Structures are given as C-alpha cells and as structure tokens.
Length: 95
Length: 394
Image (cartoon, rainbow over all chains, first blue to last red; front, side, top):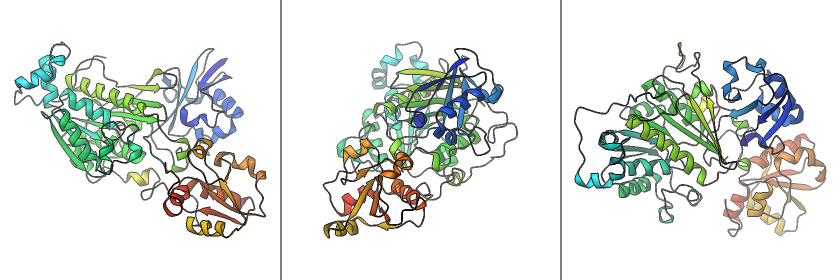
C-alpha cells in the first residue's frame, strides 16, 4: 500500500529536507522501516537503542495515535497518512 | 462536545461593569456568546501566564484587552534585542528592562481596569503550587521541557486546566491539558527528549509571527473556557504549519497508565524537572569534555604572528552569511562525510556560534585521528566580545 509519512519540521533535516515521504507498507512498523531505510539518520531520532519508538515521538495513522491502536502492528491502507509528531518546547531556545 | 466550563465564576460577589467598562467591552456585550454574563465572568476570572515571551505577548495582550480581571505573569528575563522580532509586548525602549515590568506596564496601559500580578521569578517546584493556587486557568507559554513538565504536573495536582502552546520554527502545537480530568501533557509525551536530541541552535529559530498565531489561539481557548462557550480544544491536538498554512487535528487520549493523571499515579508531588529532563544546571550538559581550547585573544595573537592556522567553521551556510571569520565551512552535520576536505597535518581551529557545536566537531575529529585541533572558546560570539566588536552577534 502506498502511504504518506508526514515528517515534522525538527526531523526534516534527517529526511532530505522533505515535508513528506511516500512509502509502500502494510503496517506502521513497515512504513517506518521503509522510511528509516531511505533515511538512516532518522533512525536514532525515532527509535531508542532497544528498537522501541522513543517516548517523545508519537505516531498517528490519520488522526489516531497508534499507542491506542495496534502500535507498530497497526495496519495501514492505501492513501492513509502517517504523522510523526515529536514534542517541541520552543521558543527561541538556543544552546 | 459542548462541555460547560468548571471555572468557578466567584459568584459570591455579583460583579458589575462601570459605565466606562460597558463602553470598553461593548463589542463583547453586543454579541450573545459573550454578553453581560460572559463579560462579568471575564472580569472575575484569574489567569496565570507562564512566560511573557513570544507566546505570552499576544496572549497577555488579548486577555488584558478582553477584560480578564486578574492576570498573573511569571518571567525572570530581561528584554533583549533578539526578542523584538516576535515578542510584540515590548518596544525598543524596553531593551534591558525586566520583561515582567515592561509587560505589566504595557498591559496595564492597554487596560487599567484589570489587575496585573507580576512575579519576577523562575517557576520552580518549590513555588509553582503556591503561585498556581489562586488562579483558575494556567497558560503555558514557556520555551523549555523542564518548565513544561513542571507546569503540567502542578496543574494536574491542583486540578487546573493548562492551556498549552509550543512552537518550533514555523510549526505549532496547541491543546488544553488537564481539563476536567482530561488528558495531560504526560499522556501525550511521557518523557522529554534527551538533551542530545533536542534540536541545536543550528536548527532552531522561529518565524516571528508563529508565536503570535499560536499565542492568540491559546488566548481564544482561555477566553472560551472562562465564558463557557463553544467546544474547548480538549482531547484534540491542533497542529499548525505556517509554511504550508495548514491546520491539522489529532486525537489526544488520556493514558490510563499516565504517571501523573492515570489511575495509579506515581508522581504525586512536584519533582526535580531539570533532572527529569536530563539537564544539570542552566545549560544542557555538554557531552563533550576535556577538549583542547583556544581563546579568541590567543587565536588573534597567533594569526597576527602569521602562524599557519586553518579555521574550520561548523555552522550552517545561512549563519555564515550573517558573519564569519573567513573559515572553511563544513556544517557539523556534514563533517563525517566531508572530513577528507581537512588536512590533519595542519593546525585546525574549529568554531561555531557559541562553541558547543564546534566542541562536538573537535571531539569527532580527535576520534578521527586529528591531533592538532582546538575549539574556539565561546565561538564567534566571544570573538565579537574580545577581539572584533564589528562582528555582529546573533
């Protein structure tokens, strides 16, 4: 299935500066694997060392949080939109 | 979901509006959704704004203009020139003044009928509950993770709604947390990002009007909670992208296992939020220690002496355009794959804006076998301070 993954602003630098990436996948897990397969720098921003989605990154299929669906096993269908929504705090906070 | 507000209208003393107030609020009074009842609720409402920066500026202005009877402001900063691009509460003549004083003056001038409580302090685990307890609604306009978790937990512990907004570059997130037992910030994000994964200054910045848009949405939601009209932004996370000019809405659910608002909370009092966010002290911890440094004055002396030093600038190209030391530009993120452009037999001085990114660059290059490499201490900011004041700071 062709699904669209929307890349949030803070992570676009690691995804070829693209706002969204189209991937072929049957589940959310497959879609994210396909995405990090294309853009390996994204991996450490999305997944912890144990391979689990980081707790400051949420993933939605259309408008539903996958934590309340079947997590990475959540099925996707043609035309679905997957959103990656990390927490942002700013501001013009700089380090 | 036309939930009625649970904001107590302090109905014991029936408020009235003076003739002057009737005139001031007439455009509210003639619309049935606000009317006299709504305006009196606004007059008796008490709202605490955390932060008077980019989000707090439009928020404070619209709450004051709307006649919110008591507005608390919490901030500790002073106005600086970089604030003026978006913090529309302040003018050029306010630069150097405490934000809280400048903000209170501006809001009181906008509406002398209301009470402004100015708290010039950091919000801390020690003072938060005390500060919050007198207010009906808390509005979070801060710019960092520790304060956001602190505001959230304090609101949940006190049962107060938290009107949340946050921004990054040209994207914003807005919702109301902790409203009538609804989802809280920790339901959405159980943990903050570790400091190393927080976008660096190279990736920071914000479109000036973005906090204006997000802050005014927070103001609208606050006013709706007070007057008890419409559908509050509860259980919905509103995402805004100013570049695409699109709003999207995602479902926000209460996490039954939430450590602070779930059925079996493990966070029952305020904690050390800097520690929770992995931050010690004021700044995010540098993961880089014991790297060789050179001060701007020493670098200047060596360059004047004609020493063969190679200046490596690890900032982004758009930063190079602002000011530079005529260095060779390789952004930190590209260093690994462009390391072959560097000659390890030469002495290299790496710099960035403040010295943090270049410290990472030096550490990386050391691991790659470079031995004659230094970090410019304090970056181009320190160069401007100590060596060449004509270099603009940003």
